[in-house]
Picture 1: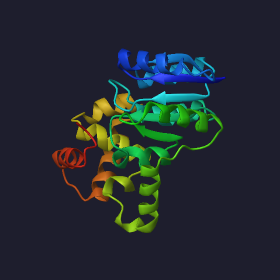
Picture 2: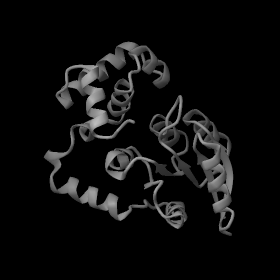
Picture 3: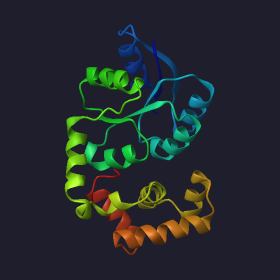
Picture 4: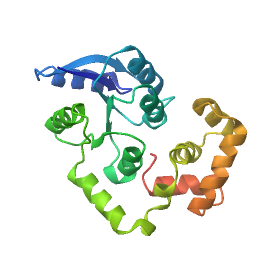
Length: 210
């Protein structure tokens, strides 16, 4: 029996997934969470094989929670189920420790296939993600600027692009304001941008934020 945790801020999505998983004899939903913070608590208190997690949630997002979940529960598989297309987030998140990435537009049975694969300790790579991997290997130097950021820089970049202040970011990520400012300087240099509004424009243009 594969024990699953569902993380999504929409109750209707959690309910739909729970109902769908219940139709498969080898799957059991062991717990649910509505935010990144609740997801961290869920893996701490519940025995899980695979966590199915959304990215975009209020407060602590899936991106913020990923590193913490990896640290607290290194053996739990993490399947990202997101409304964003693969090319926007998949590579960054797989590098950060996600076991697989699916777009919410996918065929529901693909979610089940992914969970089964991940529960065996393997990564689930869709043809779209495999194509991105191949492209990145072919032209490492041509990677998009945001793909060259470290995990923390990418987190800080997204929050700045959404208009959050250094103080807000420091609180959410448990960092000092000075450290956040250092990350900001570093990511601005890497991306060759000069202001927060440049970051917002870049993130909107590349569909990294809504």
